[in-house]
Image (cartoon, helix red, strand yellow):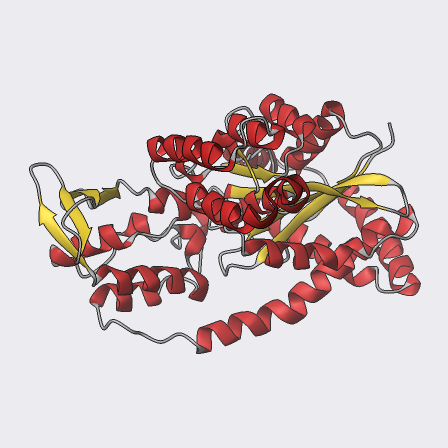
Length: 426
């Protein structure tokens, strides 16, 4: 079985800076490289500035569980054995089986936008003029918070549109725990379940789908397509986002968060702060009931322990996105809390995700960080060398000389200890 993978370390990113990117990974298997007539698995994540991040891709000779298991093992090796919290995929059953085998502890879900893209071919002919009305009802059910409401609403929808015998409806219902938000809100998805996100991801993937030449050139073209555009476009976008930040509420929590969060994450939190002003908070025996100001029924339960600085809401938005919800922020404001507790400003959403400074002699990860720095340099070396045959030949010549010198270097006892520390940390 001839298979090829391209996995890369992002330049300038240390292992502890991958906390958000590694937490959620999307594997897209619907593409094929026509030049090779081989299925292509693409791994994408999200950076803390809200931009897609290319992890790598794999060309498979066969599209089966064995091939996908191999791909996942290579991916885990690249990540030093650190599996993500969540994986989003298309509805590929072979990949589903491989994930259950290789990463049984992670949360696996289906990308909603990949499902919705199939709706016209599935339902247009059957529903005719009612297709738009049905699609709007599907979105409503998809966004519900309660499993019970979803189950009842799904039954009503099937009855109203006469879809009892439709096999696509049956398959969607059988796999509902993998795509419907009422079943997923307690898991981290970093906002990647929104249908609008599909345009961002698809545009990002198109960067390297044009690399359909000879297999020997595929690695270089993918690395160049991704790294070059990352370096030229990402810095401009980041700088522009920083310049566009403005405070809107005057609340101390807003002033606190803007100094810590990336512009992308702060904009999401700011939305919730603005909405929190429209909610009322009522203390109960063991919690708070938070309702919209014009409603006397319903609402969300918020549990807050001020001494421990622990707060949670029944809407599960923080668990789902890493951003505190309007309900929790309303309770914090009511309780005269002027800063958001540190644990609710996740390291993956922060501008600088560096650990606290420590003396070099007491930093057990110092060696690991130097290894990561070398990996980043190697990634940059490959990207730069791939730009021309002359640069590639020079790089191969110099790396060969350097490798010979390094192999001749004796390994000290401290070096053995450092490697042992790396293995334990990873």
